[in-house]
Amino acid sequence: NAGVTQTPKFQVLKTGQSMTLQCAQDMNHNSMYWYRQDPGMGLRLIYYSASEGTTDKGEVPNGYNVSRLNKREFSLRLESAAPSQTSVYFCASRRDSLSTGELFFGEGSRLTVL
Amino acid sequence: QKEVEQNSGPLSVPEGAIASLNCTYSDRGSQSFFWYRQYSGKSPELIMFIYSNGDKEDGRFTAQLNKASQYVSLLIRDSQPSDSATYLCAVEDFGNEKLTFGTGTRLTIIP
Image (cartoon, rainbow over all chains, first blue to last red; front, side):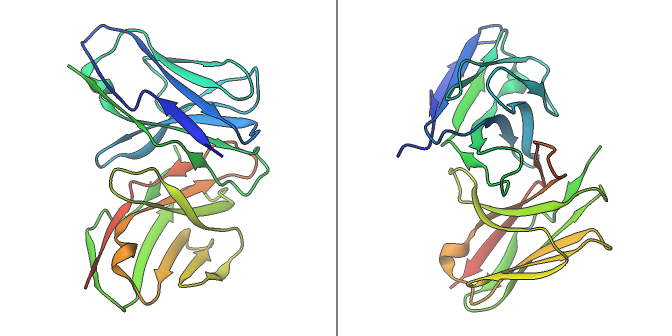
């Protein structure tokens, strides 16, 4: 059982380049999330998807777009990367909004923008 | 804007002692409270959740919630070196879909 799988694990971009972080879960969860984690800032929500076909903004959505491709997959796209987007990105999922709230996290994707 | 405050630490505790981690939150509407543990370079994992005022125990861990004071804590008894990690507090309004995390407290257990 793989849980939540993120790719790539590491990426270096130049300012202005674009890229997509991929996330897939095999737990049949309805809700999926993208967080970023910066030193001293904790985990901040970028976007989330409560169910297939829906997406909503979190705390820090500027500069990002998302796609809930199907129930399993939720991707995060940086259209024009900026150094301020250097961070560790975590994808997470959970059964639904009425669950215990346990988020299952992927291993993280470390992104550096030069 | 909802805020969740934690002392960033580091908090150093001798092996075998009780580690006490604290968290305060700003939104009185918050109803669900979670403690996650994150080892360096790893992803967060859930330790405990609590909904009701009072204490909830699970093995060496006890979560305490005081909604009137908007305060939630985590006690770790008989601390072990393997407990050394960053502990993240998170809060959620019921059915709100989103958890708001604190910045985390770094805990070091000294052998």
